[in-house]
Amino acid sequence: PQPDLQRHFERTIERDQRIEPRDWLPEGYRKTMIRMIAQHAHSEIIGMQPEGNWITRAPSLRRKAILLAKVQDEAGHGLYLYSAAETLGADRAELTEKLISGKQKYSSIFNYPTLTFADVGVIGWLVDGAAICNQVPLCRSSYGPYARAMIRICKEESFHQRQGYELLLTMMRGTPRQRDMVQESVDRWWWPSLMMFGPPDAESPHTEQSMAWKIKRHTNDELRQRFVDMTVPQAEMLGVSLPDPDLKWNAKRGHYDFGEIDWSEFKQVVSGNGPCNAQRVAHRRAAHTDGAWVREAAAAYAAKRAGRSAA
Ligand code: FAQ
Image (tube, rainbow, N blue to C red; front, top):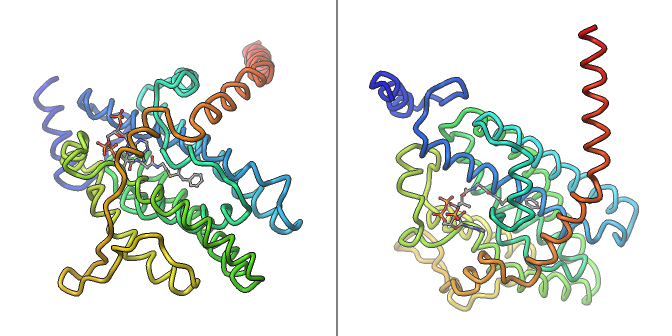
């Protein structure tokens, strides 16, 4: 590149200003941003499935309406994020192709099954809670379209998190069986939620460069610790225990200590061998195939309208 373009990019980052689509940017930055935004978009779209599983079986009309709205928000986040990826020159159809052929990742968390309705509450509380913890700093990410997308998405995620916590509070005020359902669900989701933050810093290939480019503002371990510190008091309020015997307050550090994460499980899930990976991707692929006629009709309609306005 011309030295002045490179310098402009570096100074923009140094001054904490935003990189915009019209700006020159290094190829590595573009690739990293496309990878991260695409994985995030795919996560939102695949993330509709675990909760979508309960829409037809929600225990009341009110819970059904709430859940429908939440899952619909996730679709919106996915589409919004694909648009952000397009500002970097990515092609949406290609990104979808990479998702359904298993070439691009999405968050490990969505490869776990939702076995009871309590899972809907726990996903809201823990999964959306972890997502917020990770995404609030991304509102200050150096890539403008992504940072701005995060502002709106975080607002909606906060609402989702409240929704989950309120559902769980209601169940905890219910029968002993309902309380057991909540506890059993927390026991299954706790460790996978901690894995959402990614590998430990020492094994995270992208963190250093992404921090230097101010794409990421905190490391994976920093955010994981923040999540644990924020969640333990919420668990106490709720009256559930977290399934970690090593979890305890460390006054010296001013943080909660917690046990070792099973990184072999994480690796298995990320490499496609989690409990639901095959099912999630197959479902998305089927939806894509079944929806081909809608895309074709929309494209034909757009072409016809373009022709009419040109005439
Ligand atoms: N699952 O070097 P790092 C949501 C991959 S929230 C799968 O640390 P990086 C809301 C990573 O991609 C979930 N793969 O990478 C919702 C990389 O692979 P690659 C989505 C993971 O990028 C709630 C490799 O491991 N949120 O959807 C995971 O610096 C409820 C090495 O890792 C975002 O995407 C994982 N957990 O840091 C929806 C937020 N962790 O590409 C529905 C934006 C790591 O080299 C219902 N993304 N990997 O093959 C980020 O903040 C970052 O990308 C991290 C990973 C922190 C996820």
